[in-house]
Image (cartoon, rainbow, N blue to C red):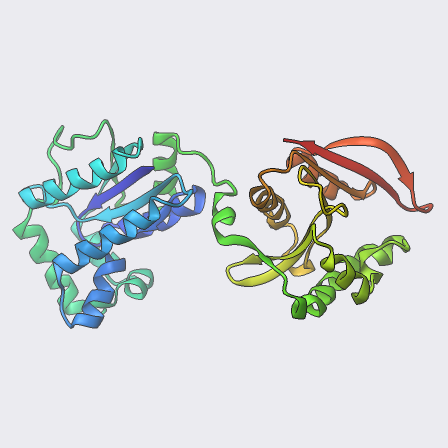
Length: 350
């Protein structure tokens, strides 16, 4: 797992640049005040040892996720041996996973930083900075007591960049970092971490039925096919759910049910061939990549399945594109349902 370490003086923009970088990559932001503020709120004062312990716990847990890396912000005092030791321990932790450390040093004029110390985003995320008189005094004390800007060649990381962001917007700086280190574009890793399939209980089948009707009704009104899931009865859904080798799941994102999927086979003994029928996402959540992630999650739940099958409407190119993006290929002959609609079969071998 990789580490993007953003360092610099107080109010230079470390957190804000990290926020923008998180928007365009799959890296997650862990800015230094995420642990400082709760400790101050609970303990009534800053406790460095406790903050460090909590940071370590968060990082250890984060390393078990599927994210490619973390963005971490730090005010590095280059004249303090303890800060050097801490940065070294951070680097070793991430490098031990086979990851790479990228270091970004931000610098900005004092006048600029004094103004940034008052910004809404900073005060929203850092309660300890809201007393502007005190926070400005602390900031000035820190930069006179410690050396917060590195000397040339001092930072030991091979992947290092210094940026004077006095006159640069945070999104511009984030793009510079992304391009300098060749960081990949944001993928579906974020959705994969925030979504899951949750098995539907028997008492939840009426809710699933309502969601299915709502999701498929626009297609039914367009094609008026007799086999549409929009007009499927609750009793039929219950019978399908009773089969030993068929399961319904809610598609869940951030705790909200955004759709549903049925996975399985009518043959209770079949373990290697499985159907997806139906899969639906509620209208208000469509075109966000949720269907793709639901299929990927189904693959994860059934690792022994070697052949996946489904069908879809030929006249709906977005649906065809989704399944083909998941790796499905068209098989068999087309089935004409009516003058408006044709079904095509898809299959995926794993």
